[in-house]
Length: 209
Image 1 (cartoon, rainbow, N blue to C red):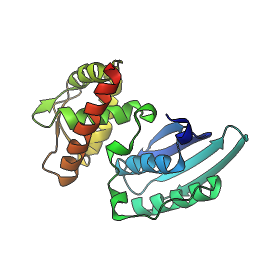
Image 2 (image 1 turned 135 degrees about the horizontal axis):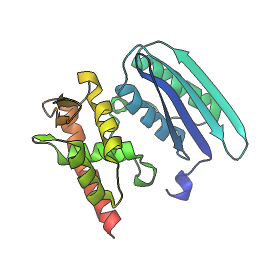
Image 3 (image 1 turned 30 degrees about the vertical axis):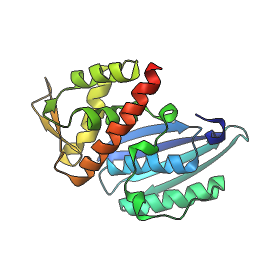
Image 4 (image 1 turned 90 degrees about the horizontal axis):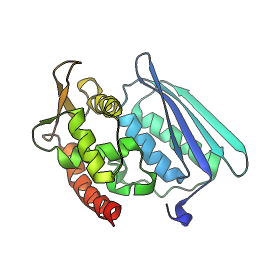
């Protein structure tokens, strides 16, 4: 991460991804607008209504701010989180354009990408045709990023993208061996595949240099 893009902030999101299921996601040292982008991705994968808690810590100042909301639509969650970030960090967001609804993968810097971000790139760029398994994903992940991804982790991430049939994946089979298919008939998925192909090509060149 370039020094001018690094911050001292640590963001922790505790949220309900489904009834009775709580998860924690953390990202570090990115600007508030990047944290907002990542939170938007999380919102897109959750069931509504749900509740969340945000904690923003400044490692340099030793200060911490938190914000909790229960219930509401995805758009309401997004707006409230943005206001909280502006208040707690003093960051001034650029005027929101229509593009805000499409969080592009190319906006994510390689150094700050989580394993889930990178696996999404693999899915969108490499599996536009036919079915695939978690093992297929781990093999391409290893080849693309020169680092391993446990098969159990890949299975968890795939289930998140499937999101009980509401996400960008279709699922087949049973627990002994699920396979998935990318729903390329959806316009949003088509846009993500185009962006992911460009990003993956750039990442592979960087990893292998």
